[in-house]
Length: 520
Image 1: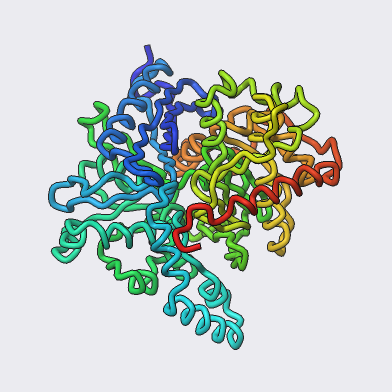
Image 2: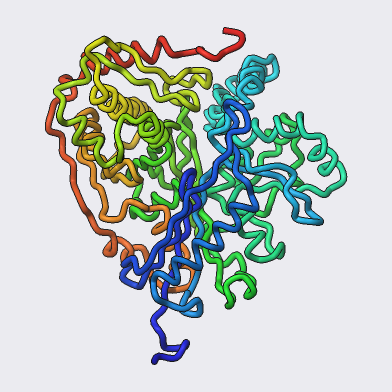
């Protein structure tokens, strides 16, 4: 038997997603040697509220790592490093002295702060900020002022949900006054727990996804903090994405393991897809859909709601992405399954393909509102166009069509705005396994889409980043050789063939807007 010093080594990639937490064990060929997945337990204490129990999430993290390593048939001392990918924008606050959470994690899907966001967006303060920044942009042509001149608060931003917490939880407000409050997204909490409170940090990709971070200065935004009365002192240190953050306390897994990457899930998927060049594009279809384009060293400033984020920072290199998203992709499929429209999501592609069309039935996927280019947190989920002849199959096809239509909206917004055309398009996430959605998306955008063998790219991206940090892999050229393609979807129909159906769907979207607004 090989000694620990000569035994084969492996890298762990863990992804804490919105619905599933999974751990993958990879060898040097990036071959998956073992895996384990668990359902993330999500609570909905009130309509529109989405929460996660932090202690339960921590327990699941430890369990999923132990079980994945066991499934791979390897020992913990054979693990060279751990890379952690996490859902973005899900945060909590905790007691700095005791480590006890003040409240559950507030998910990125949570819309409790919708009225607060709406109030801020209509306020004289924001109008003044927009006017002043537009003035400065006119004379300076600075992208920083352009971004500030059109920035609006959204419930997907940590900033506005954190402001809501400070307004409604006196315990948190008091802890801040006492200098006894820690703020963190999931990556920061997991790192804090793995090191038993020794390391309190995040990385640039996660920080830039909070709307509390200045992507131009690469630091926490003093302006936003002052605007929302959130002291910068509660924020963690920001470190490089591929970087040795610390070591797992030996009591947790039996041996110390280097923690060599923290990365936001979409940026992890981008890295896993090897979208390293400017113009490279990936679409992740999981719980939500996320379109990301590599904009290189330049920050793209959008006037339509695309969001600039740090892809990764490694040493002096900083790569930026521009992003557009739709919140309810896998969520809609899971909901349709709960209604009994089908037994297994894998059936849905064949069900949809068995019909010529949806017979005029439209589905609007808006459990968490509609994001760009619609931008309405008060839109409702709806089926429209149902007749006495409508069957379950028509409803299923309408749900899948809505995902492709949202992809078309997001892609068109990106294509119109960017001065660099999206080049290679790569897809991942659970819904990318649905051939109907993939083919219809390829037809609608009239582009070829490449789907990899492994669709859980966030795990692989986190592992790649950790592996580079400890020398497990030497460079990105080597990583490119390790990525494997499963299916290439090429356009089979002209986009115009879908125009009647999409026009009907857009009409359904318009009728779903402002449904829940108390003041509309």
